[in-house]
Structures are given as structure tokens and as C-alpha cells.
Image (cartoon, rainbow, N blue to C red; front, side, top):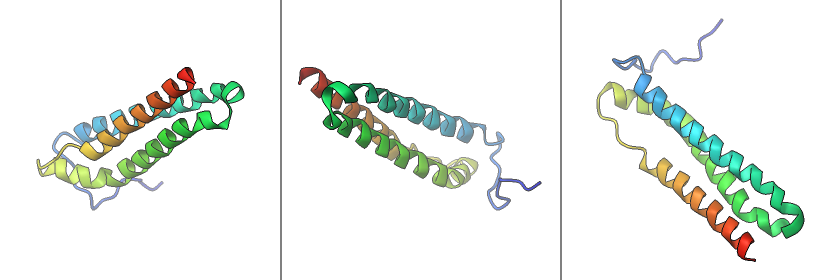
Length: 112
């Protein structure tokens, strides 16, 4: 059986737990926003396809953040190991923007 873990990535002193918690928090937040976007499908019959523009944009942003997070995880693990980790402000910002877009589209639908 082969391991999915790359041998070239150094292990952090805490076994990667800090990086793992950060990764899991992004995944958990992304899934909850994606689930909320999917819940917006209930607005489709009474409000038409225009009601899905905001949730679709939010879902695309969330998918992009999730892909970027998964690809940047080995680099973050190296930063944690070298104790030079920086906050993932861009990913957090995109999560916040997706929530704002989703909220604004919900308000637009309710006020329409």
C-alpha cells in the first residue's frame, strides 16, 4: 500500500497538528458555505434562475478556495516546521466575500 504523504515534505515538531487543524477549519467552513449555497436551490421555483447567480458565485469561490488550500498545504507545513508560518489572509478573505455575496443575493431575493 502506498502512502499519500510526500517524503520530501518535512514533519513539523508537533506532528503537523497545527497545520492539520488549520486545513480542517478551512474545509469545515467551506463545506458549510457550500451547503448553504445548495440550500438556496429552494428559491429556484418561485424566483427563477436569477436567484441562483449569488449562490453560484459563492459556490465557485468556495471551490477555488478549497482547491487552493489543498495545493498549498505542503508549503504551509514547511512554513510551520520552520516556524515562519503566515496567516492565510487571502483564503479567509475569499471565504468572507463568498458569505457577503451569498447574503446579498438572499437579501435581494427577499426584497424583490
